[in-house]
Amino acid sequence: MRHLFLFYYKFAETYLHLPRIKKFLIKNIYLNKPIIFDVGAYTGSTLKLFYRLYPNGLFYCFEPNLNSFRKLKEIKNKKIKIFKLALGNNNKTTRINTNPIDMTNTLAMLNKNSFYLTLKNLIIGNQKNKIKKENVNLVKLDSFCKKKNIKTIDILKIDTEGFELDVLFGAKKIIKSVKYLIIEIQKNDMYESYSSKKIKDYLKKNNFKKIKSFSFPFMFFEDCVYVNSKLIA
Image 1 (cartoon, one colour):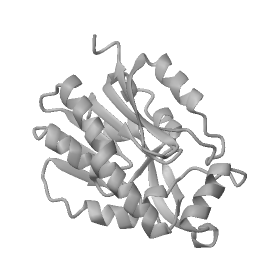
Image 2 (cartoon, helix red, strand yellow):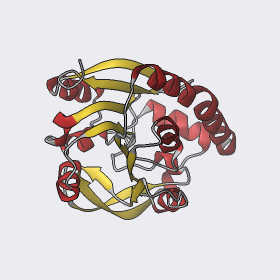
Image 3 (cartoon, rainbow, N blue to C red):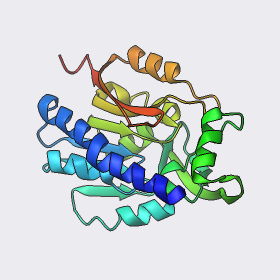
């Protein structure tokens, strides 16, 4: 069943979900030599979409999981910079929960009472005894940008499996200079202390306005596109 799930996910992502996002970006977001951050780059599916749309851009990709990082490193392009880092609200070494399905690796705590988690385990098999811990370096986006002397980000994409708010909390300064944000919003109860409302409130406080959302077919999450209304009229 797990292999069937992975086949469906890859098919839906490649032929349904990402093409819709691509079509929207082509029509609505025009950028010349943009700086694009891909936080939670996994193996590069969204990165490749960005590169096709903005070939003159500069891309910073963050992926803490070793298996996914190795696949990303196979992409050879001087405009694409790849870092084995997790982004969050601290600068420290921590541990990430990894399991046989790399796309669901997370720094967030799982909610053991989650109906969605129970359903997922029924579909792909109970992963409880297969979850492992992997050491990762955690950094604030503010700290990274200060070190690299990055003043603005044209597109910030965040897909960190329930850890999105921590990433935003570590970007209190640079967030004011982000033009567009693409962020995964969970519509399930799989992660402890996860709150889509807190994410939306934080973005509203920082002048971000949602302009589009894309629900993943038959899955309980969506990718939302926001614009910084103070920077883009």
